[in-house]
Length: 129
Image (cartoon, rainbow, N blue to C red; front, side, top):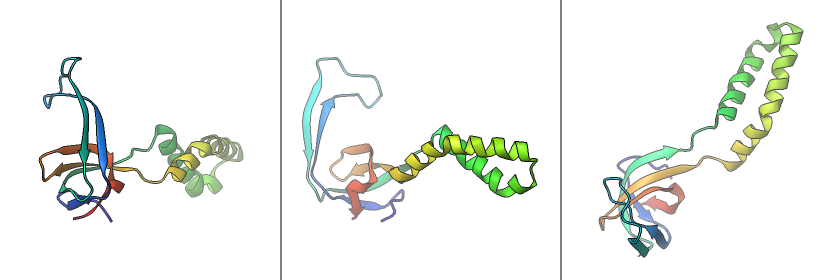
């Protein structure tokens, strides 16, 4: 399922949230204020407010750029430049492979019908409502 802003979704698993309280205005609550835990049951529905995909690290973006340059213009380059470019691409290949193995990471902000807002949570926790 593709998550998009404005789509109705349903929580697919029970969640238990724990941690400290932060005021909506962004300033931290006093140190003594702790939320303990909050349980949300599977089946709770809400509306997707934002969808965010994981950004590519700088090394991955550089690998894509250099690999494209090598593929497109490598045969036309002087041999020394082509070899240097191949070495640069090879040095970044480990980061590229690691990024590919992780797959896309989509996080969402969902305003649940009960008034709670879940922000920056994995998109895989929801299905279409």
